[in-house]
Image 1 (cartoon, one colour):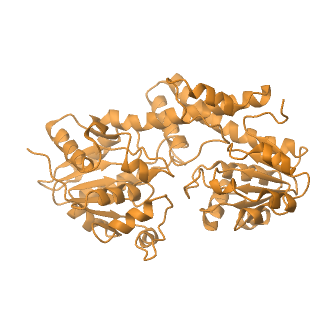
Image 2 (cartoon, one colour):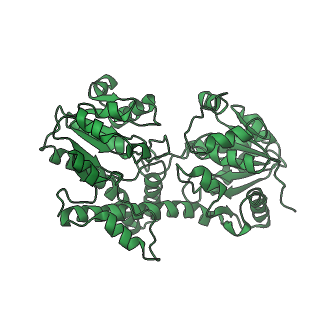
Image 3 (spheres, helix red, strand yellow):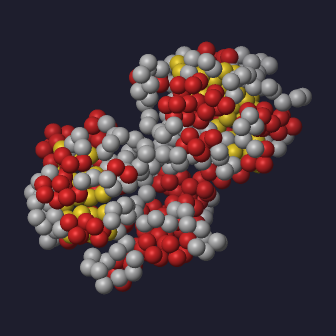
Length: 472
């Protein structure tokens, strides 16, 4: 039997993965109709908004949606219709870390994946290729296949593929336009290989053939977790070295530059910071920890757990350094936190270091001003409330103020903390900031973003992550 020629795609889930991925597929494959569905009406309305006020911020995304929406790209809440009409269905729903029950704090919550899978089985009246796009534990495809086969209608065949995403928020569109690789995992049966070919043919519209890697289903699922674990491990490694630098007088920028010249290591992901965040790194490592423990590999689990523990240590260490530098107390002092997103060029706040820092400052009874160019006030309040569930929102608002620009946030503050590496923070009128701050005025650069010497010349006391407090 020949591979199916895909003419209609349905993507279940209009979030950070499904939205950009399928918008680019629609742009690059004008002959394929792509419908992205979600049960969240407000999110779908935002994707369909006349002024393109999209629900997520990603450089280049608006331009892609402008070109394809209404032509062969559609956003809808009519999940059943899209499933029924599609040849190929991406399952791109949220898989957060479980908060309760078996595996709480480590295992992925696959409730949304199962609900989507059951919906496909209930609605489909013809054979489908079902593609696992969400980041999931190894062998999730097996569970999906069991559910689909147990609930399918006569003459309905389901082929399961794994096609993990390797996007970095902030560069997702360029990553999609020119990916390092597209990974597709399938069962190594004639039917599985044909389904794999069908999806490969979609990507082949713009991705060179040598960059489309086809592997076994379980290898594909594990490769996604492994890639994120290795990247996070590099960040935790350089952050661990930043603590040694601060204690010895070495400069972490110089150390990372020197080791990055080694062709075996390379320069990427060697920038010390206040800690990694985002929806993937921590979640995927904890998933790997849980998987290792489930497979009775406690030493492997302990190894990967340490990557996350080092990240938490880095955040605690940074907030402690702020308190220690401000004469061992920040009670009643105003701290300006610049940046709330977990990294620049995204509005995503999941696992952002800023949330931990602000919570630490709150517990020290400081007053906090926050400014971020992309994160909404509603999102900031939501995250701070979730971080301190026992503290009423009104009490949080007594300590935290959300500001509309950086100058406003820094006014009358004792200290400025750089929590996100937004480029605009480099271009702030730091002399005006200094004039409006209480003296001595402190800056804590948690992202190696600012020119410390220039700031010192203005009069600031500058503390930079990975460098000693006093220059030697």
